[in-house]
Image (tube, rainbow, N blue to C red; front, top):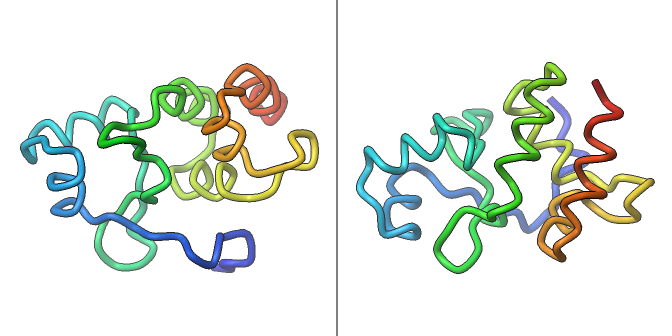
Length: 115
């Protein structure tokens, strides 16, 4: 698998890291993942979530709806992560950067065109 689209300084948080960063018990962290508030990957061995998906000790609020739109379009978890972290021409930046800047409508509009 190519990491060409992955940001070089991307930090990945394992499940124990998520418990610490989110200040939540393991069961709650697993629920956040199961309910698509967060998305992770086992591509690097252990299951992990990109740290950029966490803001001020909580999952980025606008992430869940975007994850759901992409999952409904048939994207796998790895494909969802790759799309969020890869420069998107129509947005002029990565979708996660646009979400962090509060542009969830434009991100989801682009995501819906991928179905």
